[in-house]
Length: 171
Image (cartoon, rainbow, N blue to C red):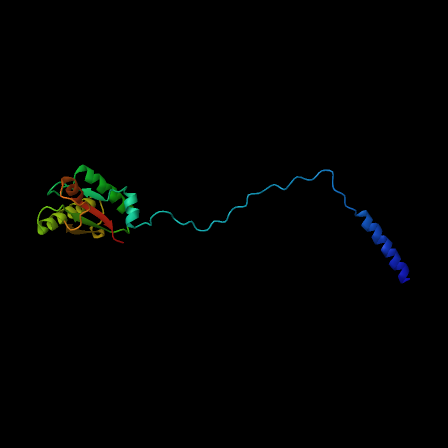
């Protein structure tokens, strides 16, 4: 009986396999549509200088971190006032930032005279920033007199570039 059963099973499976004979379809189905898979994004890395750095400050104030003075002068003119208003806007926006205003002079005059003039220039800029609402505790001053020129030379062009107050971020 086992032989008969095995023979029937063999014939049945052969018939079943013959029925499964695959032929290529006359027309292929359309290709699956491409779906856009979102690219995973991690935290974005900020580009540009970090907040509270000198580079960020200079970029934000469009290079208006320097004001210039007339010979032997320390008065704030309208151009200087605009630059200081721009600086004050930055300082109001970033309350954690503290600055030092550096006073500079040209090479003419004694060391003592130039240190005193540089101090008056730095204080003039500081006082203007304070008048615009910046807390005095966030602004320090220092005078370098003629010790740190940006332009070398003994001519009016060099002297004009050196008679300045520079605002520098300190934190």
